[in-house]
Image 1 (cartoon, rainbow, N blue to C red):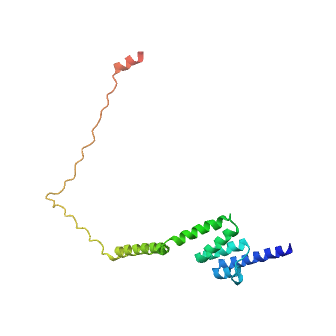
Image 2: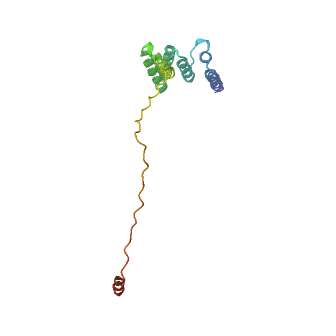
Image 3: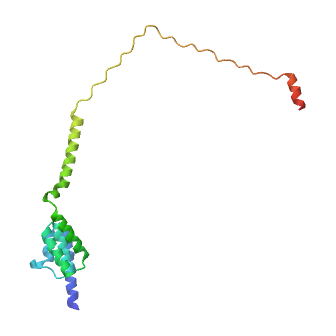
Length: 167
């Protein structure tokens, strides 16, 4: 019992140190910590971590072998199946596919450079020619305004008022 606990603690410490190294970009050292003396770890957890480190390092051939070994040791391991499929797909692609994103960025930057050179390097458009106005033969007369019309309202007749009162 004590032997299993000490082995578990040692595994946890190795995984913790390997994780710290991997976080600092030292993937090779992290792999060496998990695969001491070049031997593969017996623990499925350490083997999983080693396969993930090899995948992250870009060593896809070695990573594929490690994922397959993990799948042999644990046939139902879903992550191992998924990673084997992903690595096989990546290795099946032509070698030039990895340069497509970089090529897209370079092409986009080239378009921006050409557009800016075109905008900044061209001469400004010529000023429009003034439109000639016809010569005036006579002075313009100011309009004369007519006074507003007056409106007269009809007034009530006295007879109509009497008629309306009786009703």
